[in-house]
Length: 191
Image (tube, rainbow, N blue to C red; front, side, top):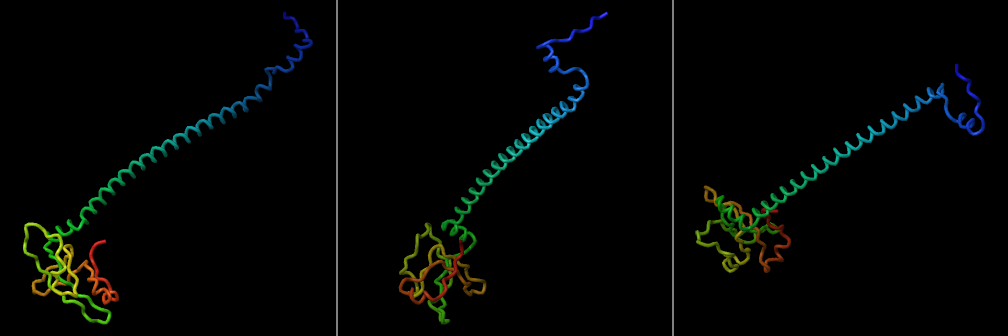
């Protein structure tokens, strides 16, 4: 038979009171331990989900930055193409390819309804081996009418022989400036 345990004295008795017994107190701690484990597991899973969402957003952001860079490069290339085709020499060459000729001398309407200048029909110049830089102002048929520049193009005469209206990008000469100030400016193609 076993000997009954002797009661503990002093320090050993105090330690024995602090030590949990294997009875009902162990069963009371089990829900608390499970709650702590569930909270830690849920926190870890939430942290992983947050991290993956941030990484996905980061990948999407870098993809959008790359697309923006490509589209910016394409836009700049298209702008360079538009700028090169908008040069006066390129416009003149394209107009000649379409059969257009430089416009004649334009006429201006004053606010009182009178016509200033004498319009002339646009005619094709004789073909020359090299293009002339600019016509001289003294070659203008009417001293009151402004001279047409090399890039001022209008449509050529129609089948009936009547002149078609032409658009000129020139301004009146300084001597005619006071009379032309009240008249609306001539329209010109372009920007």
